[in-house]
Amino acid sequence: MYQPSSSLSAELDQDVRWQLLQRILKSPQFLKSVRLREFLTYVTVETLQGAPERVSEQQIGCRVFERQPGYSSSDDNIVRVHARQLRTRLEEYFLADGRDEPLVLEIPKGSYVPVFHPRAVIAPIAPVAVTPGWNPWWIAVGLLSLVCILLGVQNYSLRQGSGDSAGNPTPWMLAAVFDAVEPTTVVIPDSGFGALRAKIGNRPPLVDYSEPGYPRGLLQPGMSASDDYWIRAMTSRPYTTFTNLVVATQLAQLAERNHYKVSFRFAREMNSRDFAEGRFILIGSSIVTPWVSLFESQQSFPSDWDSASSRSIFRNVTPQPGEPEIYMPNAPNAVPGEAFGSVCLLVQRKLASRGGITVLMMEGNNIESSEAAARFTFDAKMSQDALRKANGSLPSTGVTQYRFETMLRTRAVSGASRDSEVVATRFSASK
Image 1 (cartoon, helix red, strand yellow):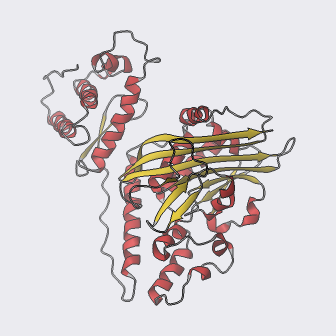
Image 2 (cartoon, rainbow, N blue to C red):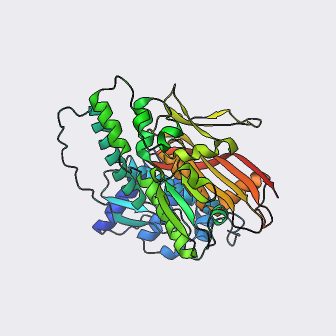
Image 3 (cartoon, one colour):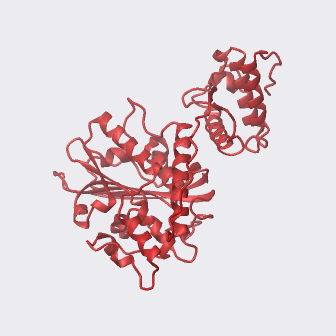
């Protein structure tokens, strides 16, 4: 078991870093995890003592996890597994108990050497003048949306994106939907449409969304003038979330690196005829991307809306032993707790031609689980492991029709997904 030495530098900046380390170790995020405390203590103390060369996977394995010198780290991934947990706990600390810390301690991906840097300062938000006659609920939603965006920006700055690094092959699901000749259309979610559910309490049919008169079908008799104004305002502009923009940016970067043809369209700009054939990536569930409902009949885990709880859910069409019939988050949207995400790849191509349709859908009960679905799609190893779990294999060139689906459980914390795991998979293929 690792025991740090006491010969820390007496310089003020070292003392500040040492005191920060002590506060982190005593926080709820680390108090019950002896191994993670020892891991963080070892790498931080060795770095502060000027010996970053000792902060390697081999050294950590021997000093913290009591592995024998010369053990094979390629066969024993205990350090890498705990490093992922450590990064997650550090993010949680600085988003919760350590939100007022002037310094942030981070362990960048690809390294075990901790880095200290000043916390980014977000300018204060000016007071909002309330115009008489405005619906206070609408104002609250607007403020919450702004706060979520600011938290998202700060949160994203503290973690690296989940996309591939340059030189790595395209994850297999994205390779199935991207092409160098035929363009892939990425559909950006309409968050304004999703926000309407909290207001009108039901699931507006696709026909209301796709017809030219939208949102006429959402305006109900007896609505107040402010409610009528709010609905028109939310449906007249292209609203989306920061997480959706991050995913779209990662897809654009991947396409640029590999010379894939790609275009981006807002969900409101699409119509059902666009989906007759082609390649598509749909970000978000049918709650925010209504076009997902075009493919519900082919999904094992279609998204739906539960009016009783006012929550987005996933239905399990053919539950396997031990699986529930419904995957429902245990907390409302924007509240920390367990949530579910789904990734579905539908391929129906034609032999000896580029006709047919390929659709990749990344869905979630909420923003955090949608992020988890996107992370899964970009994670080649995790997605291939899930494919094997479904008794499937990477489809060969001759396979023109197949369907792969995964249900993910994740934990929503401060606007980000944590500790995602695969809880159900499906795979079918035919020639």
